[in-house]
Image 1 (spheres, rainbow, N blue to C red):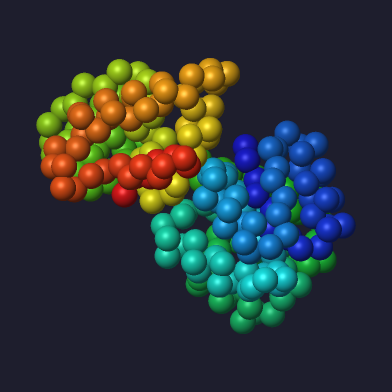
Image 2 (image 1 turned 135 degrees about the horizontal axis):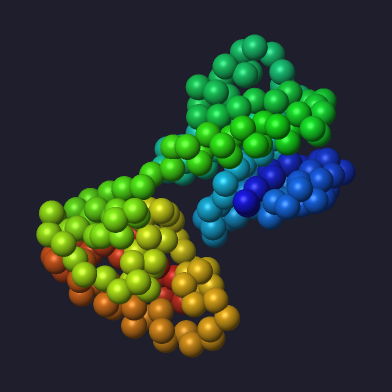
Amino acid sequence: MKVLIVEDQRRLGEFLKQGLGECAYTVTWVGTCREARDALAETNYDVIILDLSLPDGDGLHLLSEWRRAGFNEPVLILSARDSVEDRIKGLDLGADDYLPKPFSFEELRAHVRSLLRRQSAIKQTVITHRCVRLDLLGHTVKLKEQNIDLTSREFALLEIFMQNVGRTLTRSYISERIWPGLTDNNLLDVYMSRLRMKLESNPSEPLFKTLRGIGYQLV
């Protein structure tokens, strides 16, 4: 399970990263809004732990920005702002949980476990975007109600995009997920060409956007 910690206090950030890492979580710790945006654009996380008072912005504004963009990762606000009004505002803007500072690390772990259980219970098995319908259990894909035959690699590639609509996915991130350890950079281009041939029925309305030298985006 991957956890993103957004916390500008170095001592607390290092403590959380070490503590959650010892609990078998894969932890990324950043200290600014800019770094948090970059981290979430690069990959998805199972839980985000968000401080509100950051050196380059307000965590609530960052949370609101994420929700407007369609990012649905569970967010636990961890903040010294502990008034009822602060908690209500945070939850109304899209936070899934709120834990005031100071806190017990064991209580924090319990909150994280609760969010993970909740997320697992509601995880989608059928994902739709525009005219594409991907069934994770049935391992089928439909385009405008027409069945589309995909190989297992093509299906896995499409699933990554369907789980990250609107995000820029780097070439290295996609390749590591589909072909771990493989260094053939041309293979991704071949498979992207195949997906486009099968799913982009109208050239004037592309599904995939190429960002040269960076990666791809499902739009």
